[in-house]
Amino acid sequence: MNSSGVEQGVVIAESEPPRGNRSRYAFACAILASMTSIILGYDIGVMSGASIFIKDDLKLSDVQLEILMGILNIYSLVGSGAAGRTSDWLGRRYTIVLAGAFFFCGALLMGFATNYPFIMVGRFVAGIGVGYAMMIAPVYTAEVAPASSRGFLTSFPEIFINIGILLGYVSNYFFSKLPEHLGWRFMLGVGAVPSVFLAIGVLAMPESPRWLVLQGRLGDAFKVLDKTSNTKEEAISRLDDIKRAAGIPDDMTDDVIVVPNKKSAGKGVWKDLLVRPTPSVRHILIACLGIHFAQQASGIDAVVLYSPTIFSKAGLKSKNDQLLATVAVGVVKTLFIVVGTCVVDRFGRRALLLTSMGGMFLSLTALGTSLTVINRNPGQTLKWAIGLAVTTVMTFVATFSEIFPVRLRAQGASLGVMLNRLMSGIIGMTFLSLSKGLTIGGAFLLFAGVAAAAWVFFFTFLPETRGIPLEEMETLFGSYTANKKNNSMSKDNEVVDGQ
Image 1 (tube, rainbow, N blue to C red):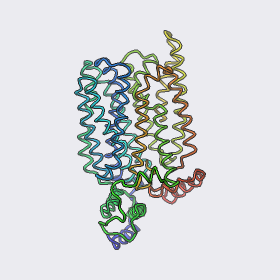
Image 2: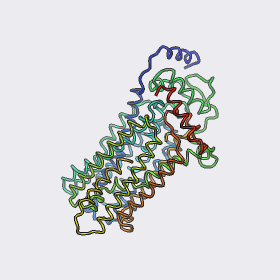
Image 3: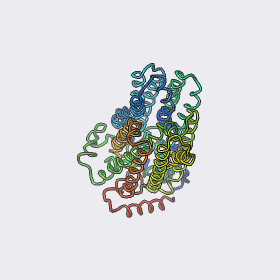
Image 4: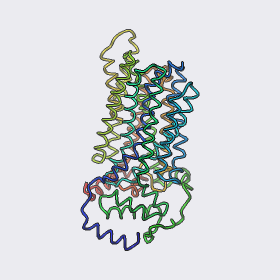
């Protein structure tokens, strides 16, 4: 690609009809990248039902069980901590392949486990894959997607996680019909199968255009942008934005260049994030960490991992009924994630976050109250309280990082995922003990308090990012009193883009 090539591209763009609001190619890339999240979700969801049988088969105590349930997320810190550097070194695409390899090995180890230490080794290996997958799939999708459909496409990993969780719940229900010592092994081991198809499919994906630019491969980056943009002119504009964000002069237009002052993968980034951040980066960091903290501290993983236990406390005594109700949780959660994805580009992420967290607060309050009433009336069948508890579990799951500058994006997203997994691990490994100390109703009332605080945080700290190109995202942050102005900028951009 040279200067004449770029000019020719602009001329072509003037007569070229738009390719639609959402590029099919970008759509396909987002689906392939998000397939990692199905395996991730399956690994999380399947343990909720498998744990019932693992506890009986391996004779585990409650403490051993909750450690087994939550330790995956602590182990994932290894993967998420290394994911930023790995993705800058190998590229986003091969990092996804690496995540699939860890999932494959971890699932086999857990499926063939004969004792507690053995299954913990499998959890460790799978946990590394979780850390890689949670960071890299959203980053890749955000970097491929055009601004007009970025909100829609970057929601794919979350959709696919929930599809994976639902498949894990369904697997629990059907494999529970097998003998106890075989059922949970099939539940866990079958997760190795999709990892093979993932690795093959990802090889058909292009590399992230932003990663290609940072490697000096401008020609390859433009080819990807051309396939994932609505018009050729938009592809040229996106390439110019990425070059500018990476510190590459506009007059450098060869297919392959030497990036000026190029730093080795990730070098100096942590200082820019943590030691000497600009006001905008500091604001972005606070917002990112706050979102990840609130997502987990409000108790979502307690519901995902311990749904059968919650339904047992609510009055469903049959394991079959508990697992069937858990499948219903997975269905509701997945359906509402899909609904949120379809409206994110229309209403914006900020509005959906505030609505979601408000709904979670109300659901958690009702769930905690109903479980407390049931707990204080042992031996009585309180159908209204049981119905309320089951219903509010459904409404809770129904209402449940792409904002970093380009050079900081991989490490910034990695840091957010690390906090996300740490909090998820803490919740998973302490929920049974917390339920005994506060009662299960008290535990959910505590989560409701966190949700209320999170709503205030979201309202105060988060500007709307809808319709803003990734390279311009930093301009929305830095002044906590400028949110209304920045939101107006976002709306103006959408009008220009034809939204």
